[in-house]
Amino acid sequence: MRLPALLAALLTLAACGQAGPPPGFEGTPSPALFEVSSADGEVEGWLFGTIHSLPDGVEWRTGPLDDVVSRADLLVVEVRDLDDAAGLRDAFAARARTAGQPPLADKVPPRLRGDLAAILTEHDLSPDTFADIETWAAALTLAQYAETGDSANGVDRALLREMPRAKVVELEGADAQFDVFDRLPETEQRDLLAAVIVDMERNRESPAVHAADWYKGRIDHLADRETSAMLADPELREALYAARNRAWATRLTALLRRDPRPLVAVGSAHLAGEDGLPALLSAQGYTVRRIQ
Image 1: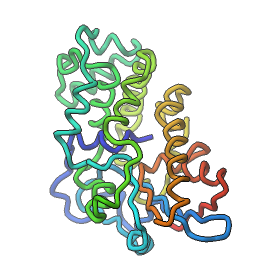
Image 2 (image 1 turned 90 degrees about the vertical axis):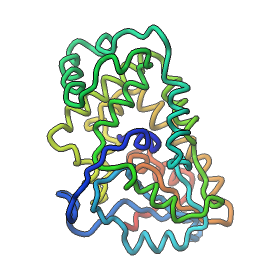
Image 3 (image 1 turned 30 degrees about the vertical axis):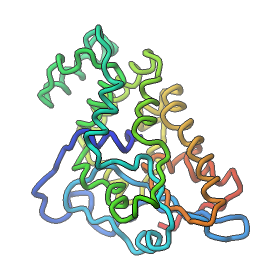
Image 4 (image 1 turned 45 degrees about the vertical axis):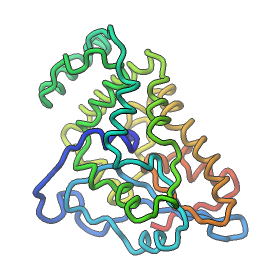
């Protein structure tokens, strides 16, 4: 599972100067796109799996997606104000610091301390960077260094630029999204930090694999406990994924009952697995059909 939309906006990691599509992004794009219909076959809306940062030169727009964008009456996203970098930093900083934090290495199991040290060295980060930073915030800060590309190329940002603000609905917003992490018990915050380190080391040899899979529409593994240390932890899976999806599904069923047809554009992991939005909406009686 990739981390939420606003996090990519906190740190820009650019892959600049790319001529043509980067490796892994050749051929026809096919990001996951679903059509949501009522029991009588009326199209009520769509679900589109986004990615929050991409390398330069990736052309991801397709005919089916352009058709949906032209037909949608609303755009539904995780966080609406992704371009408000100062506001996002303030929301993060307001929650991230508590004096008297133990050293970061003391927050991870002994077996991962060497990996943590290697990550800090690789990205020229001093352990002092995390003085007084709460564990969840340290985990999210580290996770940004695993992102490939540039948040300016994020798919959600591109869609937000096309839709008038009055027609954009956010499912959480920055404050609520950070609160999900800030409310985790310290034991789970430390599990999150460990999971971020494990996943960073797991993907070290192929850092762009998730972005390339997104490009080809391969999303099923994103919610797989075998490929995500974060989602392999039952408490983290519930707090960061399943519970949020259920809350979103409740909001979406209310939206879908109205006349305006929404295009719901959220991180691709939220469309995968038995706890994903397609499965939850199907359980509410909707027909959810993948059209790309």
